[in-house]
Image (cartoon, rainbow, N blue to C red; front, side):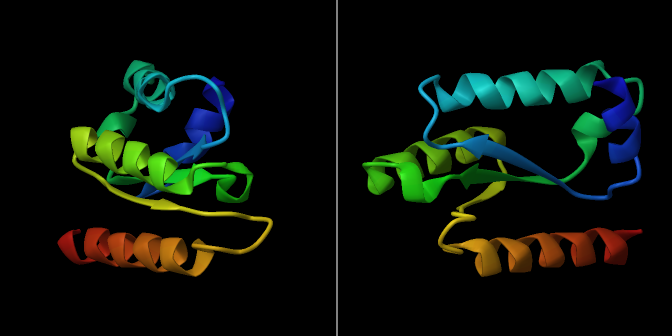
Length: 109
């Protein structure tokens, strides 16, 4: 809870990881994460972030999962990616995206 969010205060960029194999709607889970950040006293909701769909290997319809992820990311105006920790798919791309976003934040500071 709040102790974890104090740790997050030191992070210039956030990655919101959401389970693509979960049954609940993706938008609702992202809204929950964003709500927790908005409720925190520090301005965490203003931090740059990316949306990361996890467990891509466990999804039957990868195209549909990616489409939903892309749509939710588009609704929030953020970049996105899908990864599988089991197979390693998408991990390099996501790491590059996070690195580039962090560098952009450093340059603006």
